[in-house]
Image (tube, rainbow over all chains, first blue to last red; front, side, top):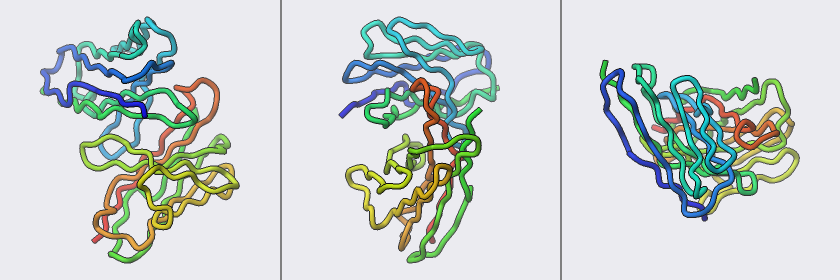
Length: 110
Length: 117
């Protein structure tokens, strides 16, 4: 089945710093999704990518669909304390199912 | 936007008892809902796909007799953890697909923290 490798596993950064995380897949994807999960909550969609090479922004967040279609990255610029949480990449539905990466735990020092 | 309501948010039960978790799509109809389980600091693992009016489809390794899923209407799916044991303690999350483009179609509930004592 499809496998997603997400890195880094965790990050502890200073407020104001930029953050970068990425996911790679064992197979070609047609869609990349990035979610954020706050403690005790369900995931919330941040950015969806549909085409190889696509670069999409959502406020301070920017995500790109890798040209090989096997990877994607998410950047957060000028991090703030409320960026704390777990960030997940997710693969495209095959059948109807999403496949999630292992997650990147982000902690921000103010 | 599409909202999925999950209830309860937290539940504590005794070993051997059963617990029901509800997942409702508030402003749309969902023929398909998904149930995930998440252990601390781990990713979401799909347990089963709930299909309105038919049997749920369970992922490999998930006991269908232990995790009973009922999707009797287009807006409600329930997950019942039967004869709960401490190892069933986890965070359970439901999701529904609104339709349209893949990414924007999936909406998640706020999760249920189950603790079995």
